[in-house]
Length: 326
Image (cartoon, rainbow, N blue to C red):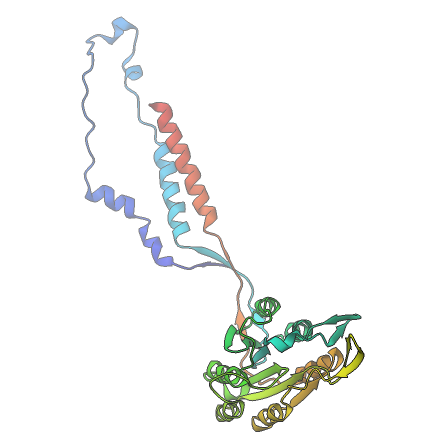
């Protein structure tokens, strides 16, 4: 159906008539002319000498004004109501960008990749599946930044996650500040729908608030935190003296991450490889959504350019005709 956004502009339709009635017409300036008393002597008739003004330009001007006013009312085409899938969950992801995330202890398709790249691939699939959730993205290192506020636009969240880079927020790890920022951004949302998924590979080495204190604040605000420890337990490192086994996750503070999850009613997960990380996201996919009222929207298509184009065409015709007469 057609919808008029600004119908009050239709009151402008009689405006030219009102102006013509209020402002008197200007008499044409009389110019010197040669008066001939007997037109018959020149072979001219009176009807040939006096030309009648043409009425069709005035008619076109009236039609052009009508189309111009219609364009100003901003006509729109409204489509059928579309139900918007809304699960009722506000879900925030907090991703560690500290220097240790460059450790290449993950393998995808037989290729060794760093931890951040693995998160982008696996978390990207997770984000794509979260139809109906409002998603947000926090990136943290030495400082914590809100990269994406809560939004239904999953494509934007995926894009900004893909554009994140190691060291973008500093080389250290401020887990407490990341949780505090999530609490601040989710504070005004429904207490039944607040979820934070925090991914890190280390311990808290920066920030103004400790992780456990931030978890206490999260508990008070009803924020559930799921923590994920990233990194392999064992890795073969080749040196000049031969191969040796090392633990690339020796700095991972699993005790604190477990305490954060338990205190907020969440759960701690350990992702040693891409398979475990994928399974973790599958478990998170099973979170029961909070029911909310169904929301609908109607797609809109602007139509004002059509009457505007017709008005411009008619004005052009009138202008060309006047140039021709002169």
